[in-house]
Amino acid sequence: MAELTVSVVSLEHPEWDGPASQIVVKTLEGEMGVLPGHEPVLATLAEGPIRIDPVDGDPMYFAVHGGFFSLDENRAIILADVAETAEEINVARAQEAKSNAEKADDEDLEAIAAMRRAETRLRVVELAD
Image 1: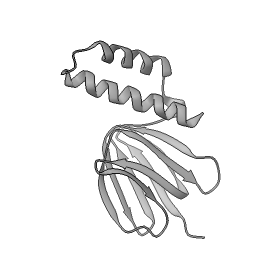
Image 2: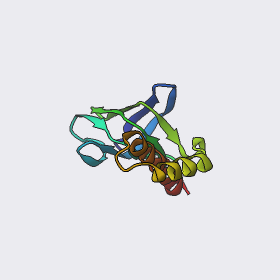
Image 3: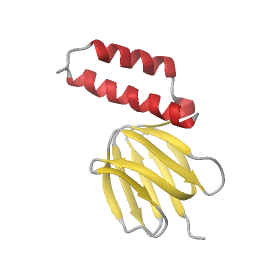
Image 4: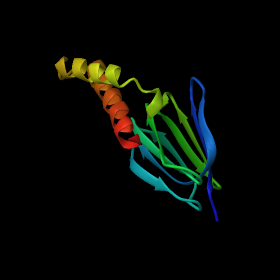
């Protein structure tokens, strides 16, 4: 059976490496599901969760905050500015960041970015449960 070889790497450290049956990434063009045999892709990652279905095991979710996605010959590389597993996410801190961002001015770009990061983190924790 064909499979993808997937590496998730953040600027801080490698997050995960292994075989997968499929992955779902969010790019600037939209959400994309990738199966073995997919055509080559190079895309910019958008803020959002990614899903990896390992060949053995339950789906894995990562909160990704920017970066790049490449796929060629069933080798997928997710090079993220920041990538966090659900276990690495501090839920209380993410909820507090979201609450603080909600109180900020609607035109405050920093607050908007903080809101997106918090929502992505909370969504990944929810998906992983």
